[in-house]
Image (cartoon, rainbow, N blue to C red; front, side, top):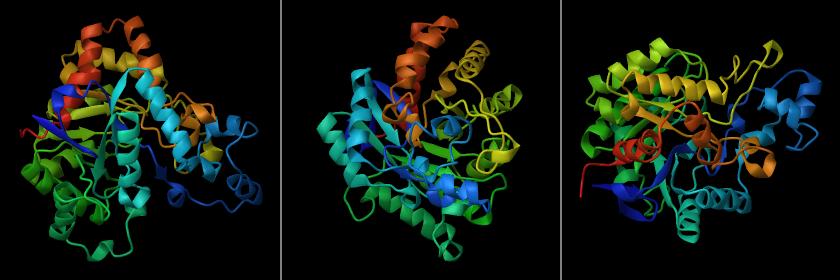
Length: 348
């Protein structure tokens, strides 16, 4: 049983501690709505610094510089901290439309001796290329197949997971096409399929229905971002459909009030609330269907800019889970066994 990394196949039982949803390099600036107010426009053009870090803890998109991670030296340092904390496998779900760079990932993987798994497909509607309306389900599926079989972005570096496929508060026609195409690819390849869902909506039901209707296997689908506005009945419903749910916002505890609601439309749960929700789901019998990660996609998530870094789950959340009564064996399942099972393509 194996997993494709950016440097080749590895055994799924050798992945160790896994972050199943991260971004080493990313650029979300084009997705941030512009403001008409001169003071906000001025702030948006600043660089991330101590002088605006407080504002960014409430509204992380107030400064556009926060929405891009592109410094190789910084990323190398952050990944090294993850490795030193005990991390071994890093899943990068940055897609071509938001800054994917397979060659950089492969270089860092070799240099730091960590596994990096890269994603493929299309993100949310706002990031789609100008010709997306002209693409068909079959042509999108072929693109995804090619990134898995032959390589991404003109390289021979292959994707090892599908996604994160983007959906919005309302699933747009082009997003639905991509979901259907991803289902077709998932059925043939056996790969795990990550789906970005709106942070405050409950359209995971619709997503799962679309994917399974078109051949995707429920136990290879992961519904992302369920830990911003935690709805336990919704999570139970999804888990009863056989899919994974992912608590992937550890380290983000934002509160966007009415003045700042654009990308974010409300508050984020706190880390302790995430951990307590996970404990409840474990008690309900869903231990084997939960994934956990940080989804680092902002400068202020990184140590270099005052954040907790890629190692946050290992360094800070594991002790928190232990304090809440989650056992060492259960933590191993969450951090090692579950992501390995999700990523495994079922092939030798």
